[in-house]
Length: 264
View 1 (cartoon, rainbow, N blue to C red):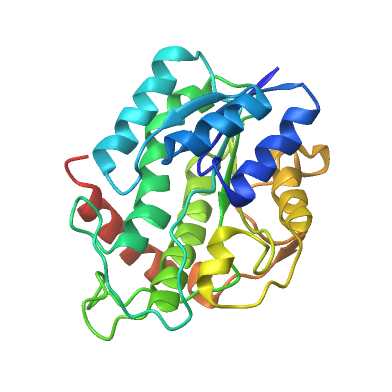
View 2 (cartoon, rainbow, N blue to C red; view 1 turned 30 degrees about the horizontal axis):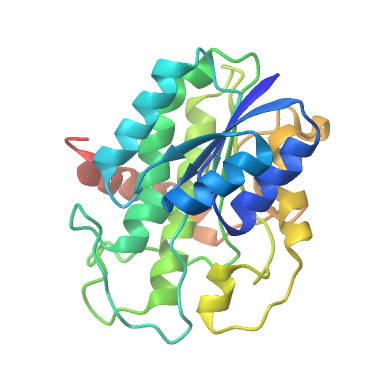
């Protein structure tokens, strides 16, 4: 039986993925969420283990990883799905509990730190997988204003964090080469009928089932066993934004990430 941790599992895509995985009865599901009531509901529906944490706090990210590490001897799959969305006209800049721009913190720094903390457990699985839920919306970080203090716009902040996550996934795949642990990122689908999409102010486009299928393929699909360092658009391997393939951009992003995570 595989042990799978899904962040953001109390709603939307994460919950639907958990329910889909639970139907087969072949997985031990660890379900992260921020809302205790919704998390309890999905845990009851799937038989999964509820793990409450606020990923806007990097200290809580570390505590979440510690709880998993103390309770389990291996982790087969980590799905970094939790995230903060946007409103298409949004201009309200909010900060995380650590004082970072909120989307950068939750959509990028939290999964980077959580993955780092859980690497020992992933290494103990025979062929572990890291699946990072990204987006087709991708924009480069402005390294002169990485916290987006000027001309803030929610969709741009979201897209910057998602491209950063794709870049990190490619770096992680290089780091883990020949260890048996793979790392891939995926845009599951566009504007699925979820609460996050509803808050965006955009019309729904794709079905939730399409998004679940795209992520599920990377979680336990036999056809992608051993595949690593790739970006997928729904079910197909695709090309990410140009910056993801630029060594200088990725090096600057790594340096920024180290600075932001120093002390955690």
